[in-house]
Image (cartoon, protein in one colour):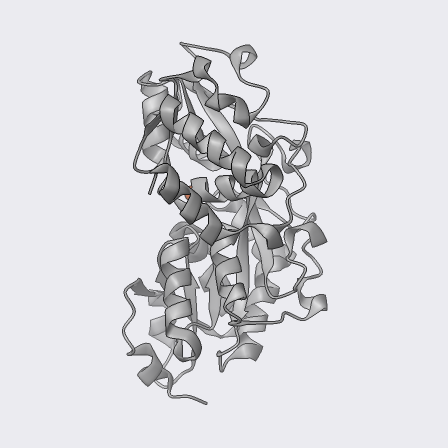
Length: 338
Ligand SMILES: [Fe+2]
């Protein structure tokens, strides 16, 4: 076994969080599962202590953004202290997969997750999903005025009416889906169209705020931004609602959060136990009950109390293996978003 203290000291840009509960009961020489976590922190803060309670395995979360952490893992290569990588969207995971750094997950381990939410390679698995939506200001417009397709937002009639946050991994995953479904030329034309029509915000919460305040009519985000605020206070959701695209439109894209084990991990047995916990009913229920309000992918667990149940979504047939982070970044750079 490699010296984990030494590995932990290699210097990681991402914020380090050792869960207090875990430090309290673990000694210094106790092996700790290091998770590079790009998923929302509250979601893992709910899940990790329960995993430790059940298995006795300590967990250290190093939090960051999808592409920040995927780039870091690729850079660290075999010396990465990460045992597990969790992403918010799948393109960051595909990047690590393409670099040959993921260990194959045993088929029976990931069997609770339906096949379409796992890559063909078997190198990682989806564990929760988020639906693309259009939030719209209910004082200014209504559901009947919403476009049939996300691609329509590139048309001149939407000029000055749409908000989005192109620097975020959430939006970039949507672009990856458009690219997969429509091809490069159509995606570039769409990006140019929404650039001409749209207003750029730094983060999806700001998109939500701008739509709710009436600053702009509609915004492209995932469902949980509006759902969370709606559930908590309504502060930035009481003058807005969500429109779900349907019929397999690119706008009905469901983005999958991924979990994978690094080939270089020296704690593969423990890491597999974590994946097992994550995809089975107990872990999925913890995720469903958490503040995250993302859709569990194990069909035995349902997300309650949201506008649209998972079973009513009509996502396009996008294979998670095909979402290409690099091509998206190249295209968005060409168009001038990045
Ligand atoms: Fe997000």
